[in-house]
Length: 305
Picture 1 (cartoon, helix red, strand yellow):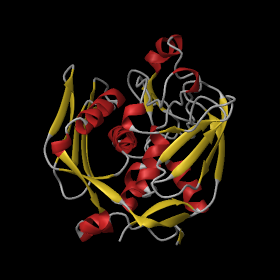
Picture 2 (tube, one colour):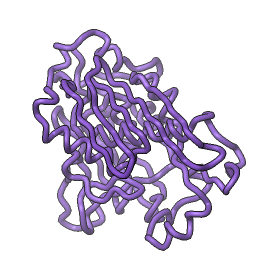
Picture 3 (cartoon, helix red, strand yellow):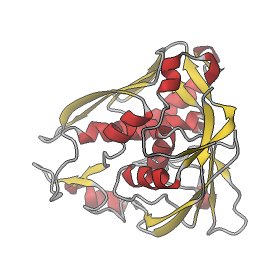
């Protein structure tokens, strides 16, 4: 059996919101089986926990937002990707501001914190969404789709008219170890020429070379350069994983994306949920060993039962 997981104990982190620019403190706490991921704004009196799922997604411009109005919580995708990447299914997340801290623009800091905190198995089996048929969404020449596949695979292509990026494609076979080694450290990115426009829209107020890859018209301007030659498409896979984690279960299926973003990922998840013949929910104990093996954690991460 593959058991549901939560944290061994609370972890606390303080950082800056990428878009809000506000300093926030976030506490990620253990939760019981089937709790899922629930966020609570502690800076708003009377705020209730809000379940993070595909139908609770609000704004999707440059980030994924849970909820709407003053209680909304922005930029949840990197944290959710790391929780999925470590096989964690249940957590209660309290935050004293409007946005999950951006850290270094990747999931690496969250991986480090959760590895140090430890992970606990819960006495209940994981459930998987098994894709049975193709589901596709298209918008403005961009598209994303689910297809049947025995394990989770993400095939991502991005296209940018920039000499450093151009067209990049990466095919990622999910395992916890592959996620930590190949995807978690990939940072978000942007272009110097867009900074003024994005700030006028109320975005990237907290953006800097410490939490994003930034490019001028010709090159990366971060002094340390890139962590991977194709770091940009690897970050797209990180975003995709965080967005599809909002389906509420691990996934057995292939996700193919072409020039996609948060909005398209959410439309794809909603379309899947609206197409019940295209998937089934299956206990992990009924799936093949290769699915279970994907969630083995590498050495150095403590598992408590």
